[in-house]
Amino acid sequence: MIGKKNNFILNILQAPLLWGSAFSLAFYYVVAAGWVQHPLIYRYFASHPVEYIATTMFFVGLAALVCKFLQLIWQPNVSGESILGPYIPEEVNINNCDHLISTIDQKPAKIRQSLLCDRITRGIQYVMRRKTCEGLESHLRLLSEQAEERASSDYSTVRIIISTIPILGFLGTVIGITRAVAELASLVGDISFEEAINSVVSGLSVAFDTTALALALSIVLMFGMFFINRWETQRLSRIEAQAESALIGRFYVEVENEDPHLVAMRAIGDQLMQNTAGLVERQVSIWQQSIDNAEEKWRTTATTTEKQLETAFSRALQASAREHREQLIEAEAVSREERKQIAATLQKSAEAGFNQQQEITRQTEVMLSVAQATEQIIKLENALNQNLSALHTSRDFDQTIHSLTAAISLLNSRISHVKSPAVPVRLTSEQAGENAA
Image (cartoon, rainbow, N blue to C red; front, side):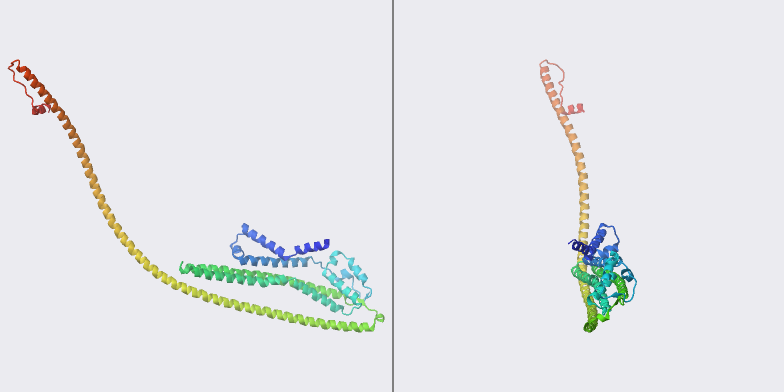
């Protein structure tokens, strides 16, 4: 139970999806945090949703290659002599191979965990089961082919990612072109032709950036898989040669105890194995050829589709640009007429404003004249008030004279009783005025 749990944890830790997702999150965290502020990083990795997906898939494929590379590095490099000892021809009886297995079990864990030790152990077990060394070489080749198939299957994830990333880039290009065409259609009549074309070109540049990024990432993964696969193939070939060198010719058979019918059946079985191996090889070759043809056909179809889409989009853009140009010409003519009308209206308004300004100037002059006349009226009013004050003073003086006249008349009447020869005094208003003056 503990061993299964440890294997489960080990498989999870070796999962490329886990490490690729972690690398992708770390990369985009660094970009979002502003630790890397290069404009090309944001343009090619963080300006389109397809770029996020393609980058994440790239990190998953890269994690698979790194895991494979670490497995090859950690794989111990041992030789056949370190496992079975020096090679001595026909030293082991096929009926007594147990001591070889026990010898291998006593080796250090580093040797027992190597691929060469596993290959040699399987070869010895084959001899123990068959009770003969006939067909051992074919069995070793079969084990080598199985190892190569397992190694090739380890790159299945990387192959799928390498095939999918360009499709994603092309999808991002198609989406970008579609958006650019839609934006061009929406901008027709609203802005100038140059601004519309600049907007469309900027959208197309973002669209083609996804294809460029996808192709670049695919090339990196392709070269990485090629070098690691070639290294692993060379190691498997070396392991195959060392296994054959360590086992072929090491066993012998006691012929006197061998059953002739068993020997005949063994020979027939070996022949069947050889024929079956040949059929399998031919079938594998046919399958490989079919897969290559299908892949080539897919590439041809993708290239043709891309060219057709490019031609269709180019025609659509040209038609939209031509229609937009015609609409711009019509809009310019309408705008010219409106500008003329506006200019005429502005000229009339200017003339009316000039006339109004002259009228305001005339009214201002009249107001100034009114103000001067008002000032003169105020001065006349002050003079009149002064005259009225003088007249009021003169009327009081006249009343005083009349009172004096009345008093003199009274005195004269009194004096007349006295028979005085004096001439009576008479005061008039004119005299009073002269005296007062």
